[in-house]
Amino acid sequence: MARDVKKNMISQKRKKIKSFFFFLSASIIGILFFFGQLYFYNEKSVNSFLETENKIVFLESDSLNFILKTGAKNVEQLLRQQGFEINQNDEVHPNLEAKLFNGSHVFVQKARKIIVDESGEKKEFFTLRKTVGEAVREKKELNVGEDDIINPKSEFMVENGMAISITHVKVERETREEMIAFKIIENENDKLGWREQKVTAKGEKGKKEIIYEVVYYDGKEIKRKKIDEHIIKNPVDEIITRGTYVKVGKVHTGFGSWYAQPKYLETKYPSISGYWAANPWLSMGSYAKVTNKNNGKSVIVKINDRGPFGPNRIIDLGKSAFAAIAPLGAGIIDVKMEEIKN
Image (cartoon, rainbow, N blue to C red; front, side, top):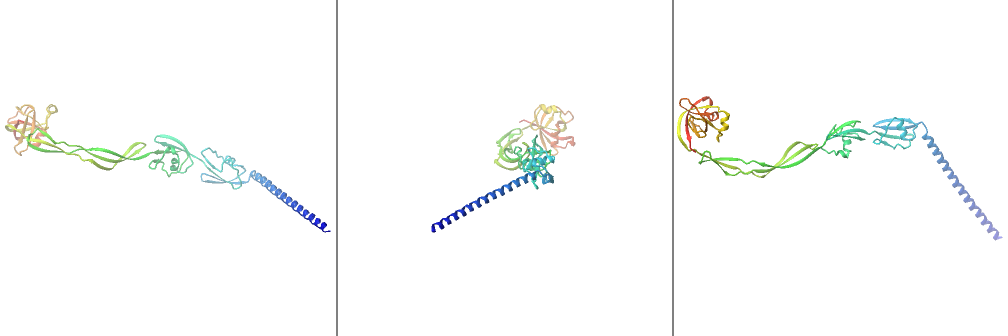
């Protein structure tokens, strides 16, 4: 009797286990079926949605905003419908193959062509930048520096077909050495003849270093400014000693006048002093000291012409020689003429 009860209990337990697994399997199948139907429904709904003519799409192009009703399936179809010609330089987001949904946003920026004149060479570029400065600086081959001159100015907005010029500006410091001239100091020695001179101390040029700021436009120097200098070597003065001793011979008194000598005489008879005169008897090329007896002023002249031949007129001075001892308006003056022997 006990054995039959035990068998009966085991049989009932097995039936319960079988029922549980059957229910579990049926539940799993039902869930899978539900999600399969849901996926099929969504796919069908999406496909149906893509084909509808009533999608609302937002289009932004070059800061202009449009709200469009369209049946286009992707971005490329939408842009073709709106007459946009897209090239490789333009920016489109999302990409042309992207599907459109109700409420999709499409961004389009058309590239603008700029013609850049760089140092006389014209180059064409396309840019998505808004300002001139941004457009030219993004082109590495232009190598635009901070000091370069851009025309129109950097802050101007880029327009399609805009002509832009770039002047490359280079600012450099340049160091140069320059010579400093020495001074000539003259002194007199009454033991030396009046036509003698000696270099008592030889002069030497000095040297200085000068720093310039140099501005170049496209490699051509347009401005140079000295910003500093210092002396490397000071110059040494040159000292020249001139003789003042005049050995005089025979003395003559009479009248002196002046005249403008012909150029050929000055060329033919060059003089150290640069003063000329005419005399009736002194040797050509000889020298005479002429003193104005009224004021004591004197001048040494070189005889290079003949005359004068008037009464008691002993010398005719060149215009500059006469002016050294008397006003030209005096015309004729009372003079002492001494023959020079050295």
